[in-house]
Length: 223
Image 1: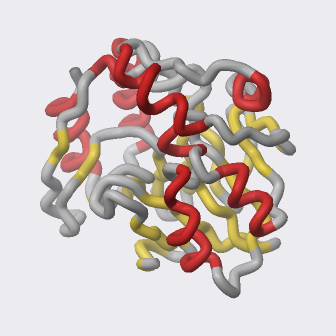
Image 2: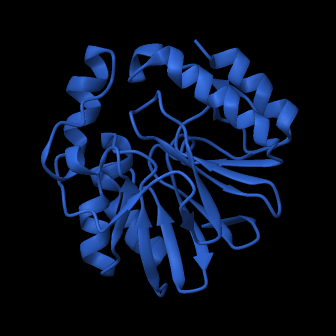
């Protein structure tokens, strides 16, 4: 894994330039944000070897973020936290929230392995020193996590930067139909810029440094 900020590490899953897990060093142990696809288990086990995982947090319950979630919790013994809006559907319902058929039939089934949600997060709750921020649109209960002390924002969905240079991003365009509500997704992303983050760390793509660069990405890939 690569350290990208104080107490924050990013581990590249597969495909390496697109999917990540984020590990936050917390006072009671490490918090693992998102688990990727079901086939991410081997890499996750490597990343987490020797770490004391105190909680697994999910930004949203799309199949490419929770595919290995049940396994991760069983493997580490960590409790699971996710949005209170999505928790019931993740436990025993339908997570095919994508507007388009591709997401419904290809991405949603990747999250078929489920488990009990131990903590149901709402806006303003704290995760390892980060504040939960509501970011609905890509999914009904998508959460971002904000640390005001150093203006660091962790997102599970946003513009995808393919460049390893955080000051020179290269943006990947994705279909709007991968969102639950495309218009609301765009509006939520723009609202996050009002926080004026300096470092944006995503479980999709490489980190971006600088609000202007990230804002440029939002406008370029918004629709």
